[in-house]
Image 1 (cartoon, rainbow, N blue to C red):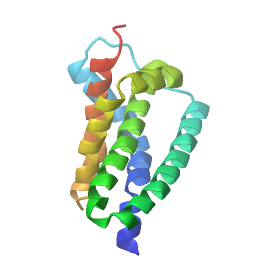
Image 2 (spheres, rainbow, N blue to C red):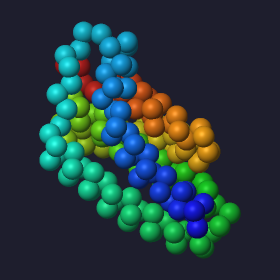
Image 3 (cartoon, rainbow, N blue to C red):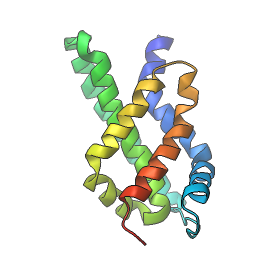
Length: 157
């Protein structure tokens, strides 16, 4: 039961943990690689709570739907799991990083416009999140990767 729960709760846990150090990691990446940027304003608390609740509902709905695939096609279950959770991780990490500079609506527009690239980066995160101990570093690296992704994809200020 613990093994199953740890796998199922991987994405919500990674998303929750990122909230503790998102600003510090993103600020460090920006200071090193994007000097001269104004400090990020960040979204308000209500926007963060609303985004977190929408993300939680999406995680539950998508993983419940995926459960059917896991049960019907066990050999492809790990790949479906990584693809689905890659989508979820990419969506959430990019949204959190982008909201710091664009607000919720601007971040969502930019995320939708670059969905494939963001999904691919999220999938690259989902695979190592499945590996014990390595999964402890992935949220920090994920914030750094998505900070770079944001600056590559965002319109010039």
